[in-house]
Amino acid sequence: MLLTSAACVIFADQLTKMLSARLLADRRPLRLSSHVHLCYARNTFGLGGVPSGRTAPLVLWGAALVTLLLIIWDGRFFQHPAARAALGAALGGAASNLYDRCRRDAVIDLVKVGWWPVFNLADVGISIGAITAIWFIR
Image (cartoon, rainbow, N blue to C red; front, side, top):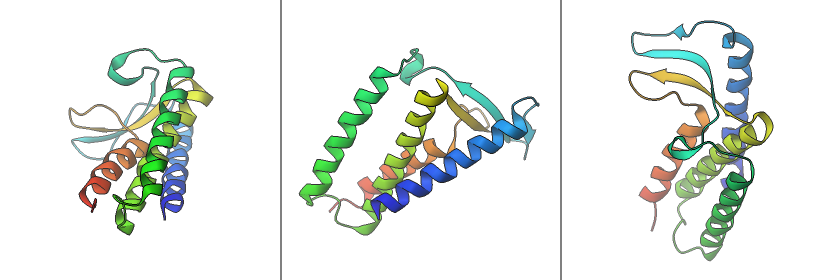
């Protein structure tokens, strides 16, 4: 369940990033409603607006992955199938953004909603996945 949801998030995120690069990279944002726009934005900054290289995100992601896998392997916390699927979505989102950092030296963002910063499907997977996994902890 964990690997399936991770793979789905990675696939959907990379597909939407590829399409936005082809369709929106040289154009103005596409307005879907008064508050929702599709655009192509390259985020070259890490967390908190600090410029990031490749080494730190790889080390941090690897440490988080090992920690999370040990917690899952222990089996006390994330027993519910929804929690495992949600963890997979969060890991898939993190992996997809890490892939962008390593491949493109930037994370591609494409959705702008109101005043909220531009984001992508990987960010949604991370946020919703983490919240859902915590919700279903036993």
